[in-house]
Length: 313
Ligand code: RIB
Image 1: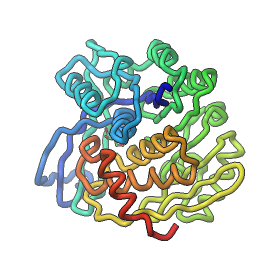
Image 2 (image 1 turned 90 degrees about the horizontal axis):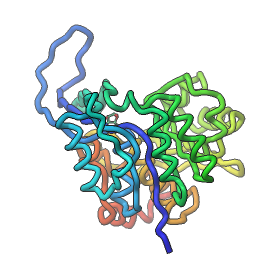
Image 3 (image 1 turned 135 degrees about the horizontal axis):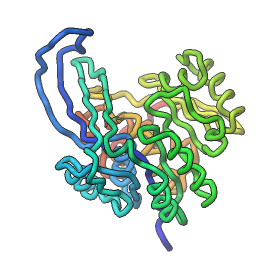
Image 4 (image 1 turned 180 degrees about the vertical axis):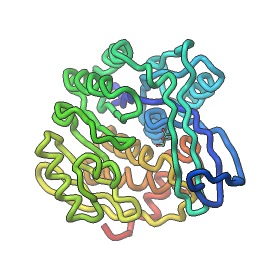
């Protein structure tokens, strides 16, 4: 039997991370305490998150012709991600994210798309070749929106489930995109951008989910950070409380969540268990610094789930 695999279409960035006691105010210069370069990018992070949990994973996207490009490919491959679908775009620099993380583990991120900004219909064609047989396509919003839409259409045609992480936050999703999305996974900031009102608890999350259903989304998964995750399907809705951990750095927590969610679905779990996997993977990632450097492997993931098996549902 061929093992189900997951395809990710999206961004690949090198993260330039500054640790600082607090985030600067406009016009202020601060002395930070540490600097590191860490492979990241929402698409690549999600691919690594799925692969580290033991699911075959294929990445489609672009890196630049600089030294970061090679390092980013190496990081994906080291996690076991198939990178045949990643184009080395020699005429552009690799995507870069400038990240500041403060002592309370809050972060600010500025993304310069580079090669990610050049992703186009040719990349969607490479994606389409890799969709037959896939269990899910993971999408985010760090490559041009038109290509995200085309990628969702290609998955729909191939009968592949689409999981959209609407990050970074955007209020400009094409209305036609929603009906191509099986599972949408915004956090509180992102869902506010989508529905136009603040989402702070399960009541407002349920209101937001209803709007997303009306627009055509099948399952709405709203990530409420340290509170937990609200999920609304066509049949019912439920809340999965957050796992309690000591947070070091929240970068890539959302990507780790989506990786855990997709991995659970690839292993045949139902949506409730998939949300628990997402929440566990997200929680583990905040206990370590950086993006791909913080994503859990299968052994630590299984041990964490086991250690928390008696927590209240
Ligand atoms: O979601 C975290 C990611 O956002 C970082 O790795 C950074 O590259 C930005 O894309």
